[in-house]
Length: 141
Length: 141
Length: 141
Length: 141
Image (tube, rainbow over all chains, first blue to last red; front, side, top):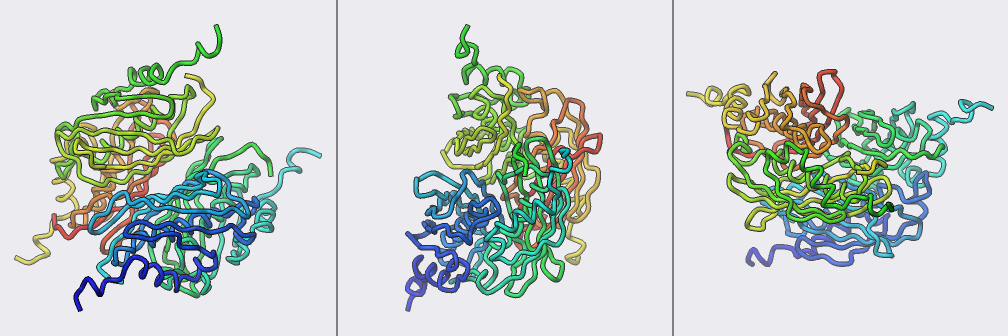
């Protein structure tokens, strides 16, 4: 069996990651699309995701974006780990809102890669934008 | 009744914020200390906070740090909102770990403020560090 | 005289800023285009811009991006100040390279705005990307 | 000749870097102290470092901090490259101000490291703070 056949596909890797990802399950994150270096997820805001201002806790949009980053970065078949992420919260997110995230691969080197993750609500308004740097290990999925 | 008496204390503001903060409740975040511009929280890692690598999802340390930032920034009595946060994940966080966060007020102007939030595990090893910029509104708590 | 006539145009503001900007002059920054919320600059890398690795010092791409951010943010007519910027250096920049920067307005609120600045070399390869948050004052240019 | 003797000291590495660093020379950056993972620099603000607001261009404090980061990160003897830096400009810097920078090593792994660089003026007021992530190569200085 040659090496190409042993390598898992982006969908196989992400389904493997999701199957063990208890927190993404709690958030009820849906995988809308996945290909090499590109991932799109969605998630609906529930009451238990709200903060003291009765809007979604900043950690919710962050977590959706961080899962998107992880899936996009790992989709090539090498285990990759977030080392630095920054997020700007642009628009308030409310209960019932349906968030959708998309990844853009800005740069991919041998050791590190940079992704931008955009998070939109159901009105197609950008609610948050993340820039994430990952370290690419030699460990094959 | 004079203005001083009307102004809520840091503890009153944070308890008010926490009482409505459904997500911090889900995380079972404890308030260890709160004073003007300074907050310390803690939280234990449960199974439903893990990601596909069976370590805590990056969103968990982020959420703990983000709540710490929000409480520290709002403690002066004016509603304040995070506009930009960056976090570096330094050490893997495991199920059962007890995370503790501390805020440091780096700068506080009239309109914006900058905080650094450090997150440690039960062995006193720093697991994450956040830098957060907030916008200070004129709305009194 | 009506208010519209008193308000300076984006080009007037940026030329006013540039006329006093000694450091951008030292860098020999050229204004390629300027309109409301959108600016494009260029700059050629000289020997005195290099660092200890004989490539352009990280501060050079940062400065070009920071000027682009300042011009784009101030172009509406209200004085605006950078409060937080992050930059990722993606590709080495060499002596003789011609850098071009473009701004993208990601979000503009009443008090703060977020811009992304992309910096490319003469081969149209992205060498750096900046995310910048500005505070929008009430001071008219 | 054993390996220990071949390894350059932090001071040797930084002097080697500085000797070729044309831009740090233009800024007239002084090395105040250097040891493994720790560097302190200073620099005086000249007229040609000012921007359109007649204060120091944001790129100047950035460049001082970026050099500090580079020297601290490279001081162990392995060539290291900045991959992501974020800086908050806190207080205006004026002509004649004497800036001093200090590095703090927050985390050092095998492949990446995280530093915080604080920049102060002559009144010991923090004017800027940088968080920088570097990639540690295998190339020996």
